[in-house]
Amino acid sequence: MLLDSASNPPTKDANVTRAFWRYTIPAVVAMVVNGLYQIVDGIFIGHYLGAQGLAAVNLAWPIIGIIIGFGVLVGIGSGSLLSIYRGAGDNTDVQQLMSTSFWLIAILTVVAMIVLVLFGPSLLELQGASGELLHSSLTYLQVLNWGAGVTIAAGALPLLLRNNGKPEMATALLIIGALSNIVLDYFMIVKMQWQLPGAAFATLISQGIVALAALYFLLTSSDESKPKGAFNQPLALEILKLGAAGLVMFLYFGFIVALHNKQLLIFASEVEVAAFAVVGYLGVIYYFIAEGVANGVQPPISYYYGAGLYQRIHTMVKLALKVSLGVGVMMVTMFYLFPKDVLGLFSEDLALLNAAERGLQLHLSTLFLDGFIFLTSMYFVAVGKGGKALAISLGNMLVQLPFLYLLPFWFGVDGVWLAVPISNITLTVIIIPLLWRDLYQLKQLEHFADMKDA
Image: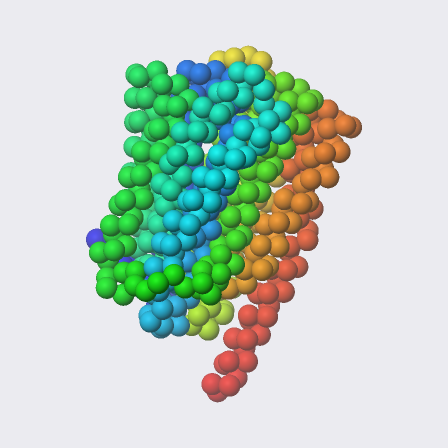
């Protein structure tokens, strides 16, 4: 019954609050489960492979983020267009959209593999990796590189499925994939003792389960959703334009993680890089909640925009802001009150735990503002303004650079931890007027439309 209730896109007469929860809850659950399996990944690696294992994965993550970002690029871009078509009642281009999306997944798979083969080792060395740490990171990365297509498909296809009116189905698949990853982590890291390659294989197999299942449901859901037609270059460019903000968000995360890794190796040691990995695992919980809220409101906002129901967009954005900011404030409070309890899940190494506690309370102090930034970027994607979304994502990266470079010279390791919170405050001050102005313009459009109808 749950799946049946989500088999159609939002309708023009549906309650906005009900539509918000209907799309947001599955998206948040899916993202949180993904966050939890990454945390379990960290727990297994921290306890069985130690600080060097955590540091090696953290050095590889910025490069892996490129692969994941390609999947999100196609999923968000295609999904946004799919919802806009549905809202406007235009089903003629859906099959062409599906076909072009599948072609993009194949093309980007080849691009990702070439980039990682040619530049993977150099990108690790640029972060300061050397010796055994470099070897461990390369071993982990090489396994994931050969499965790049699986990772891209697992990122893109559930987003297409969700925008095709099946948010609970997409959520169920992600939960199955996440639980599979946890079981496979235990089997391959603990039982088989395959160390970092085992962790990589566990990730790829679980992603393969998600990708194949999502593909099956997309191809069998309805005739109008089946891919048909050749690759459409103008449509592909539109997909890339709308999805670019999602890709840049992952590139941003990867770039910032890489810079933190380099600065921590310069101003501290491998232990601080491992501590940064642990702090990142905890921050991921909120990032995925906030991203789930943002992803959840995208289909109904796109639908309302296509249908000209602008006041409903305003209501949807306010609901999303309340939830995202509220959860963020609660999590920051928890990290300040109970740091040792949450950090103890990952390691018993006293030096690592002390470094991570300091990082947790500084680095994640403005965590809730990340939710506002995610939501604002996704709002502009949902209403077809990919350029503004891309500008916010790029700004998020560029604003951090001077802080991340300069603060460590004045405050040492604390300066590295403080770069993100200070840049979050700066960017929030910049983008609040952008969001307010756009929502105000939509309100005016609704007012003029009502006057015309009267």
